[in-house]
Image: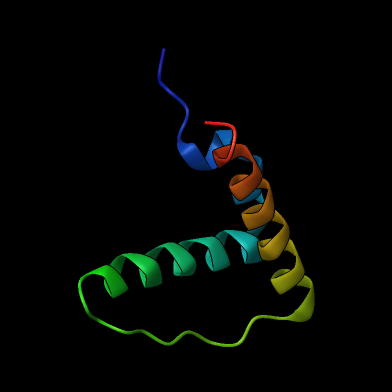
Length: 65
């Protein structure tokens, strides 16, 4: 049986615009660690709100670890 991809199993990645914002956030933070600063297009207010919600949930879960 073939394994499902992360995009198929992660509910946050099913929203195309949110998926793109999350990928850009990940790339931006990873490249910043290497000393490369990147710029991405401005997010819509709705996508920005979704992204902040996802980050807040992730941060609250991380505090329990």
